[in-house]
Amino acid sequence: QVQLVESGGGLVQTGGSLSLSCEPSRNIYSFDHMGWYRQAPGKQREVVATLTASGLPVYADAVKGRFTISRNNAKNTLHLHMNTLKPEDTAVYYCNAYSRVNYWGQGTQVTVSS
Image (cartoon, rainbow, N blue to C red; front, side, top):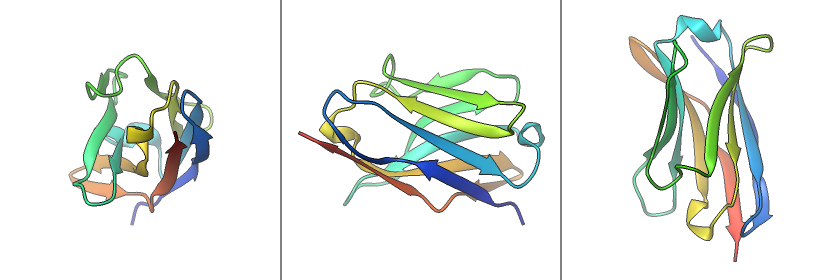
């Protein structure tokens, strides 16, 4: 059973920055792709950014130019660096990894105050 352990998140003011980290229980390159999703209260879970095994990033339009997805090969971790945060970025953020099936982290809260 694959586990994804997330860290980071918290409370930040509008315009601030936060970083999230995700550490999978097996080699990061064993997944076809990994990414970050978010779910705001009363809304469906949506993709934020994904990263293929070859390193190709894809971003949702709402976060392009503000968020950066990356991985640290030495630490076997996935990261999401979030800049110029807006109140509408407030949500629970989930790490995702796909290898025949989807694996999910437990989620971490990001709250952006106006």
